[in-house]
Length: 192
Ligand code: MN3
Image (tube, rainbow, N blue to C red; front, top):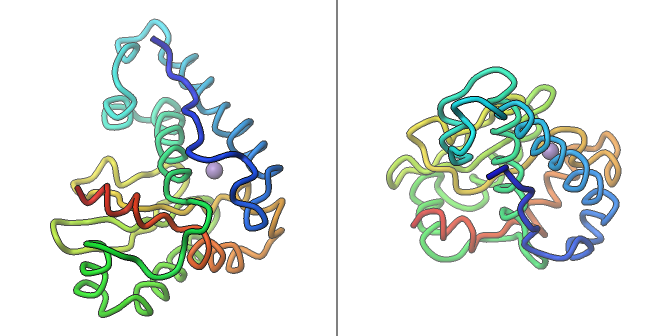
């Protein structure tokens, strides 16, 4: 069974005006789809064919890893956002943000800084190490899925994520993500 491009969790115009349908058309319809296509071509006829996406991410390197991890990271990113999201968290993740960072304001500052200072392409993540939450940034396709830490939330800071809507203004995109898009329900689900 070949890997498939997963459905988006919302309509492609649902995040407007913060993220435009044009960005979704390119980012999901072209970039995410290309990672799926590349991955299928790369694993065809190898012993990775038929393994789960998570297994491939955890057991591969080079081009296979880059494409598999990018398929997984993008699906995780779409679910990290929702229409009408953003702002202060609720539920267990809110408690753990308070105990781990001191409060939402401190978390927000640290997350925004990690996302803004990831040099070149990559990702910023909120992860859980037991009951301790941490912010990590990863270059290119690197993902906390290969570590013992549990990913809760991510922002894509590759230029293709924001260039159509924000041009070079990555910090504005990051602020918008935090204030209008973050899906805290997803982060709480991932805490499990
Ligand atoms: Mn991307």
